[in-house]
Length: 318
Image (cartoon, rainbow, N blue to C red; front, side):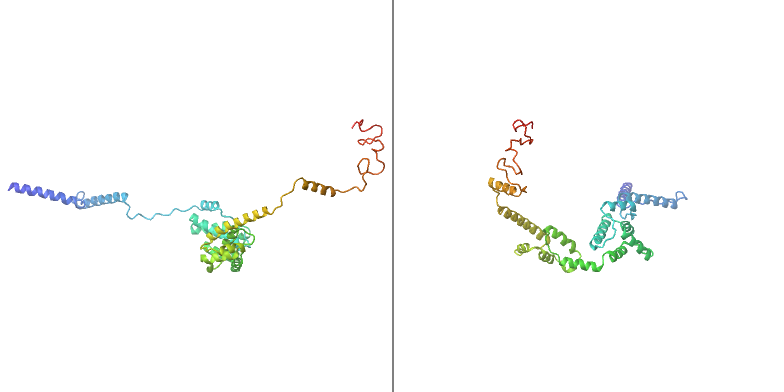
């Protein structure tokens, strides 16, 4: 009987060990006074559980707290935008210049991740001259109610990019021809004006047809024998063909050039130059071959170097 009890006790010990291995640790709450009684045991168990949670939180952050975004420094951001090539705008009657300045500013805002509450102030910083006077008048008229950059853009377009200006740009694009430009220069002007037209020219095939319509006749003939799907492909082919045409024109010019003659041509040019020299109007002396008036000093025996009669040319000191 004693052996059976010891075997049952050993089995119970093993079962208890297995249970503790597969069961979360629980702190027993012994009975006793305030220090060792249920309250103190519960507090100790709470501290132990909190410590375990903190250790787990240090290893794996299941739900990390939201981190506050770092505030960008206004002056550093302004300096960075200036380094990106943002220029000052002093006002212009050309809507293209005004729109290019606005587009460049918007692009630099996007590159620097500029906060919205900085954009309007930075835009005002880059206006000067007539544009700055316009902004001062606008800010006074609106009592400083323009605080967002989107509102600034609306007022800026009303001032410098009117709807009539867009109509003129669209008409300029529709009338655009290559003229004396190269294909590359024509493409640059084409792309510069294309963004101001309506949606009817957004399709690539429509742009290709419009581009071909503006080039010179000899290039249109070349384009008619092929099909182009993009403007870029068309420009590359046309630029190559234009270069070949220029080389052929140079060769034709060289082949039609008459080669210059030898000594006969030089002699003829010299005679023509002599004929073109002004004459003094005096006849040629048959004795000395010069053109002079009066008696010939050579016939009289005078020295032809110093025009003196007391010696001959052989004894002349000159």
